Length: 244
Image (cartoon, rainbow, N blue to C red; front, side, top):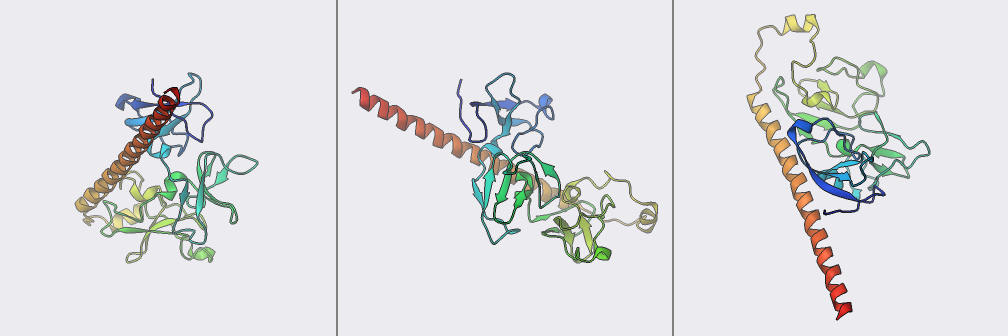
């Protein structure tokens, strides 16, 4: 059985395939998202519930991000705080998983937030939504925007997706949710009754984005495997040379 080591975990890991009927039953220990069907890693110890997406296994150790241009962010497998959790500066949620961290600024990003696309399309909106960090106008409490998908208030200083042309705002998670996932206030529904907001092209664009992300994950996985195989062959060659 092939086993590998990862700096985030004290036990060896082994690659495995997540079947479609097991989707949602396991969480990645790196990004805390559900494992989807495809390749992943799990701990070799039967009672250790440590899993990693292939993409999280191959994450860059350092990242330059547009939200924090003054310093490079470093990947930490555990939050570098006494309480062993952190608050993500992008979404405002607390996490105990991997963080891209800036020590001088006490700045942290979830793995998933650090790799959010700069632009997304919704089926119910005619224009692309652009990622903004931090959200605009939050210094004035009266100007804190409301999410136009779930109708909740956007948390102060958290990132948002925005269409400047229409003054349309969404939470990060709401930006890609289905248009009918949240119940629309009755007054808004009456105003928009009969309007056709289109969106077939938006759906195609988002599907293309997801496919590109899947291809990137696969490429990272293949590169990591190639590196490990090369390292194994080099070690084997050294061992044979010593025996000779």
